[in-house]
Image (cartoon, rainbow, N blue to C red; front, side, top):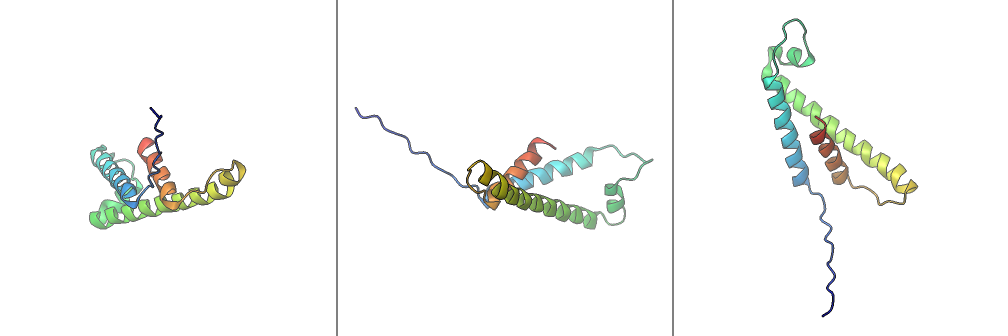
Length: 110
């Protein structure tokens, strides 16, 4: 009987995968903020932001968080493609893969 070789399937990282990770991070962050005890002696940026208009503050936090995540993924992609890919003869990193790496780091390190 001939030995059958398995073909390795390379599944790309899709936008849906990254969207699910983003939603997980948002839900986890929202729940952690909701259950933190309120300390009346110190004002955090969150309490200042949410003091007057909670909905506006929450939307602003989401926009800032998404901007930081996307900017971090872009920086990782640039750093990888210009340093690691050239130095260690690795393939270039696509933006979705860089975003997935940043999101997985955010999931593992809260």
